[in-house]
Amino acid sequence: MDDNCQTTVNAFLEEHDLESPPENHVLDLSAEVGEIAGAINASTEYGSKPERAQVPRDELGDAMFSLLAVCASLDVDATAALEESIEKYERRIEESGNPGSS
Image 1: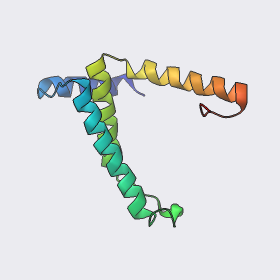
Image 2: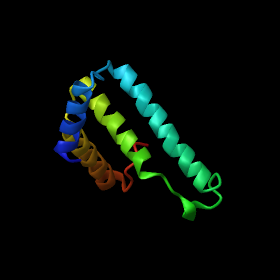
Image 3: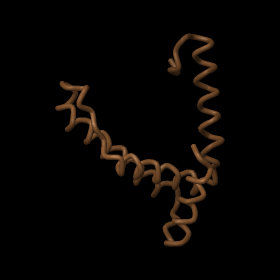
C-alpha cells in the first residue's frame, strides 16, 4: 500500500471534519465490503458463473478509503500493518504450506 494513500485519506478526513471513533469507521467499512459482496453475488448470479465476477472500481476504492479511515482513527500505519500481515502469511506458508490460520 502506498503511504500516500493513507496521507490522502487522513487529510481528507481532517479537511472535511470526518474524523470519528474507530467503531464508526468500522461500521462504514462493513457496509462497503457488503457492497462488494453484493456486486460479486449479482455479477456471478450468486456464484453460478464465477467467470463473470465484477466489482465497480469505485466500490473497491470506497472500501479502501474506509479501511484507511479505520487505520487513521486507531493511529495505525497501514503500510506497516500490511507488511506485518504479509510476513505472517509467508511464515504460515513456510510452516504448513497454507496461508490460513487453521
